[in-house]
Length: 159
Image 1 (cartoon, rainbow, N blue to C red):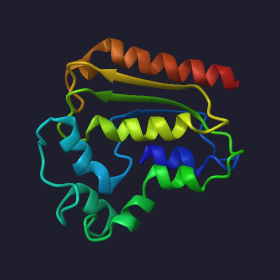
Image 2 (image 1 turned 180 degrees about the vertical axis):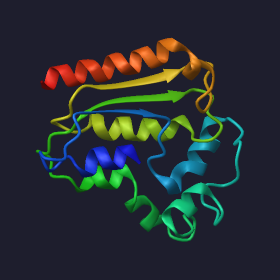
Image 3 (image 1 turned 60 degrees about the vertical axis):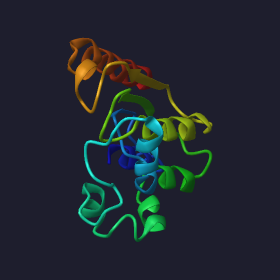
Image 4 (image 1 turned 180 degrees about the horizontal axis):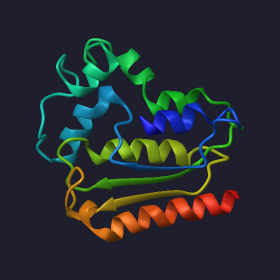
């Protein structure tokens, strides 16, 4: 949800975030199951499109029954709706290569969409080997230090 906030608030200088660090973000609810299947990693949870999925509970409706509305609630739709000249914050996207809950393809979708935009601040995508969903390399102090360094650098550049 930080991705939605970072983009949704971008149009107003009073609310614009200067930087966002996103670890394994879901970005397009209807494509989560397909991205998981494409990753070749067995899902640790049931279908993201199911009525009892965390995504369906968050949205208040079944993702699989209303895919267009589910996509509209994500950061890709928010980004697409912003005027091209809207300045965007710096983004650090981090995902585990072996994530069994949110496939790395979700972060890849956001990275590609941000990369295609003009006016984006610094943009980095770290794909952590031997990392799952918040496990493995995410537990390494180096990952936290890299995240802090990115945020610090982005905030100092804006000052």
